[in-house]
Image 1 (cartoon, rainbow, N blue to C red):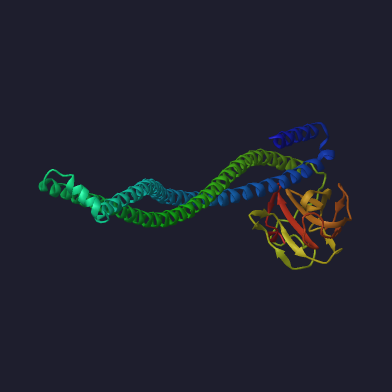
Image 2: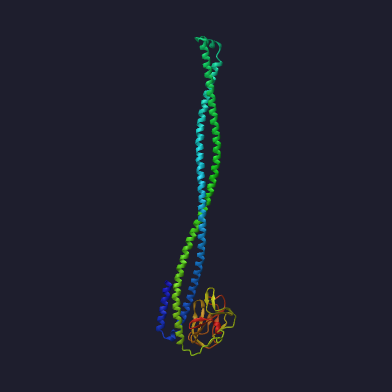
Length: 399
């Protein structure tokens, strides 16, 4: 917007000069300002076209990124669901391991206790056997004599036998319990070994799945960041394009005003030369092949024709007239403009040097400049324009 304000201020100043300065002296200023404004318009249109292309590219890229983000988000959701299942299995496996560890600890404690009880039972049984089978004769006789009857003898012997058999059953039961607990602990250890193998496999799968999810999340977040950056760039480009379009609109109006002032300057010119009427009435300024014609080129208007010549070739006036501009003008480089009256003028651009000056009368075929490659030019040539009432027309219709 600062540029627009500056352009408006410049045009306002130009209009003031055009009002205050006599027509003969000011005739050159509108043409120069018109060319400057048209040159700026061309640059702004290029910027607008470039912005439009970039908007299209960025919009397409954003659409593609949005689609990829949706795909990644779906992938993240699916992989997180799988990770949740694996983490649940891992928790269950670890819970089972902890439970088996507790069971093994209880079984180990019980086994140690039963081992002690079995040792005591064996000791008691051995003592009982010694009492029954290792008692000598006198002791047995004393035992028999000490009884009150034969029935008491039999009863005492039966009692000792029953006690011995009971000790034997107790020892057998303790042994069976010990062996059972030992077998249960062995099976529990095998179960724990298998559970540990399962837990390790599930833990590895869970860790791998976490890596998959992490990579997907990182890719998604990177795309989201890229989308934010592209969206910001797109918004900036759109804002800049809108500003450029506003400037173009303002400059187009100023260009139209300047074209009107050029026409006024041409009408006020002191030249009495009768202009050619077109259709072959203009002479070619130089002899050479046309390398670029009048019309749209690379997205913008090419307002003349390009004629290939060698450096320093004499450039001649297409018809008699008055020089209204001879100087540097942006992309035109060294430019000469000749007014032929009745709204017709010709322009010769990219010159190396000038052979005329502003206000000079020239005859048809008179040298006005020498060809070159100044301004926006990729090699020696003559850019030739024909303007009718300030607006460019196809030169081939006048040559």
